[in-house]
Length: 504
Ligand code: GAP
Image (cartoon, rainbow, N blue to C red; front, top):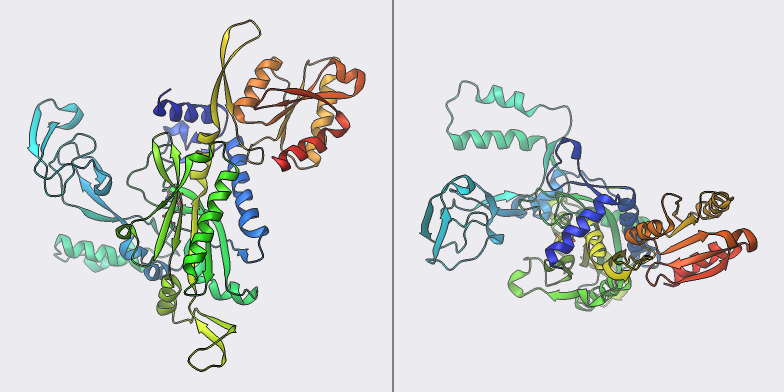
């Protein structure tokens, strides 16, 4: 099975089984926007809940926030996003494709290039040579390209009952303006009421640093965590839910004493890797990649990516950056509010007196939640060859999701839709509903088809009510991964499933 087949099979399974749908599908869909269906939302929420438990609830030194998606526009000036959060865009003068220069196929400057004139609809072979830029169009291969333009990735909108267009019309009416002047006026009018959809959840943790530190009496080192939606007007959206314009992040800003950042960066890199591997079948499909010096942002003194081996190769899942005191210092300078920490435990070396004030350094583990959904789906997808009841070869598709991530923890299945079996099965299901454990009561189709369906959606355990149940109050419990069945008493079913999920 080729790697692109694997991705196609996962995309098809997630649609067929209610994990992920194309957004606005009945209208032809919206490119690169996806809706999480009944099983997808469970998987996504389970991943988010595991992250929150691990990063916040199981620690004394991390607290959470849930900030507004829309923030004061100056936040993005201070953070550098307004000036530098952009992709280099190029237009192909042949097929009119607009693409990212840094992602385009590389060719040696001066090398031969060949393409079909007019793109797909054209026909004549044309030759040229690659320019000094060192790339060609990713669609038609042409070297006839526009120059690079910086395209800001933030979604801009406006707030309040202002209509910047009215003011603009009065201002430009009857004036002879050049294209450049007109563009400047337009920018100015829009900017006056502009706000942005956040391109990362991180900035709220810097902006609310003092509020959180003081209200919760947090002592350095400590972290602030947040999960939520982020938005980027990505030029290249690709590979299903890997890169989308609307996505979810799970980020934590860990504030530490300057000088301790190297140790904390190593600590969080190890810590985050062990979290990913905890839920993985193929632990070697997760790796740490250290950024080269020339890859580092100007404010970072170290950075690693946690990469996953997706069907198309290694690619980013989480970034862990050591961001120095850049963000707090920038926001302090822009807002005029002191964003620092007074450490009473330390002695000030310049005075010899107790207490030192400093701007904390920051380590930032920043993971993509929607990207995690894709990575765990890829890790869980497996096909096993077997023989069915009639002796024919068959392929068993199993989603080997970790039980704590699986949408349903258990399915309760009456063998037959008669002889009182549905009633007993419903009463078992009821116990799971009452305990808040997501379970599925399923009586449609043959038992074999039901097992296959639950294998495909990753349900770790199936409880089957059969003839023997009616005689001795026992059910079978079937394990998704081994297909092995044991008999257990109904009275212990809830406890056994809970134990298996918790000790997995
Ligand atoms: N605050 C730092 C930050 O946002 P990032 O590397 O740009 O860093 C962190 O983003 C994570 O968010 C990435 O590792 C990735 O998992 C996820 N992510 C970023 N852009 C994404 C997109 N367009 N679609 C889906 N996930 C994305």
